[in-house]
Image 1 (cartoon, helix red, strand yellow):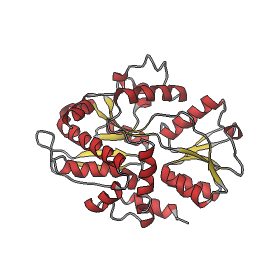
Image 2 (cartoon, one colour; image 1 turned 120 degrees about the vertical axis):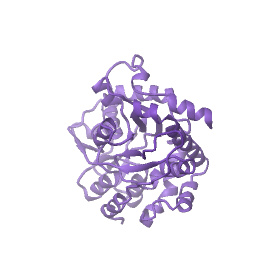
Image 3 (tube, helix red, strand yellow; image 1 turned 180 degrees about the horizontal axis):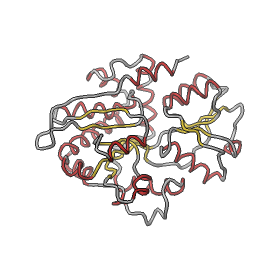
Length: 328
């Protein structure tokens, strides 16, 4: 059995800082891209895109911070240039924050995993606790969505960052129900098929990871950010066509060299599931993604208001993906 605490510790060491040459015509400052998770094989879309942007003169680094709230604050305060997550709820709460989402990196890919010896339906969880990643996270939004469509109410939301940490808690019996990513869902259900199973998720289609940044940063660094987005689009399209490619490119570019073998072995199975479910859009999402997010987030309670009346421009800037699509 994998010791996920040890894996998480090793993965945490893999906070990646990839220094690249400054983009011609853009700011010479290194572009920091921050997300609230450890850096693993699931991040190869970003890592490969950064490597390819390097050849085009863009300076960037991928870093890991403690939580989604910290990522948003770091971007808002100028301590990080680009955030990975979703900025919808804080943008609505703050009203006039100079931050916009500008690229859909990945759609939601979390599965409701339960101890099926105790839980066989969503009704069994009415009045019971559930464990999610963090406040404002996609897993919390899914849980609120489930409450709405299933007509149930969880007694509390427990916040435990890290899918692998929640998987360990399931194994240990500390929790009975949570949301796990593709890799940890496979590991848990394959290892204990008689104990753990999935509940139906329904039509929970929304963004899991968006890129967002301050509007002044996007204006001042449009050339460099557009190059990065072009490469993200190209890499997503290549991975969608060949899910064995991420593992090959990890070797080719020398990425994540300290990744434990157990996690290396999970790269191709992960991308086989992820690309089969179209989790990595090659078009950056754009307006269709915004409308899907509005529908999901208002139903889950993460956003307030009528989804048809929310203004996309209050949450998104489309200039970068439009420029990147035109340049491809």
